[in-house]
Length: 380
Ligand SMILES: Cc1ncc(COP(=O)(O)O)c(C=O)c1O
Image (cartoon, rainbow, N blue to C red; front, side, top):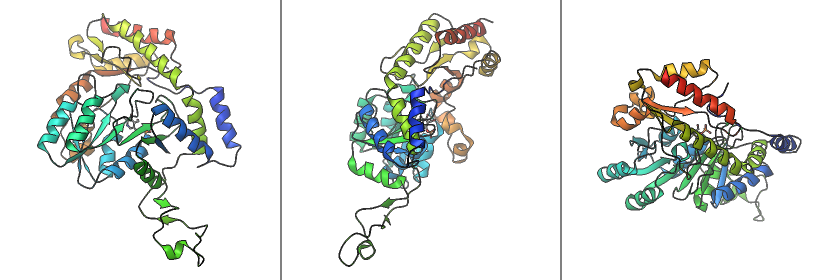
């Protein structure tokens, strides 16, 4: 079977993980700090806090940046977690429609902010690895004083990721650019925010700035060595040391992973450019880190359904995906009063969008197979 995405693990990765399994540390140990340092280098940011998954990263980022009842802009064309995190923080998602490239329409976001003073933040998703318009995002941040989360789950290795967000989140799920099994991180240039995220990652526990002086210190004024203090309600969102060992090893391969993804994207582009009723979501973009390769297919024009394509491909060994069902179409959100028709472009996009296989170990031969099968389906 050829899936739409999958991890690539080599002997070096396995060796690094085994070393940790044979060491004294399984959960937080030296590999976590090493991974955080490598993530800073890879993303050009000052601080990184590695956590148990990308959703946890979004949860903590939203808690740190948003207040109860804040309204926060988010695109519907994203994974559930980008919007759910806003609700975790007792804030309210405002869905903003998308552009032709699948990314949030920041001009539309501007209009929303002009008409609604309760909007205090935005979760900007670099959909498929294509950067949102950073200039417009920065302008929104300054003009309306918005708190910005960049959801960079698709964007590791993309130039500029984290350059505007107060906090930027990453995911290391196996289909992403690199994997730690489950894993995620929050990156930032703000020391205070990084500290808050790190504290919330472990139950809100701290070993400094103690409030209970009588419990924290002995009669000589020395810190009691066992003492810790909880000043905030946090979670256990820690990542294991062996996951971070895998992350470190995977990060070394990131440039090659991206290179391969770009080569695959180019080949798809060339294959479909001259064919009717199918087109790449956007023309080849060197700035995209190509987590996904999405084509738009005019199913109405060919008088076929998307389900027919998915079934045909699966019968022939290829598993396609759709990124994404608009989040505001989910029953949970519908029950809260959201209507997916309020973001018609995201819905129209959804009807036509198909994610094709793209991952490091996809061979040219397998990609040719995918292309040929799609051509056959379109021509039938
Ligand atoms: C855009 C986006 N945000 C957030 C997440 C959540 O990441 P994780 O699966 O690591 O919790 C994902 C992953 O699927 C994603 O694609």
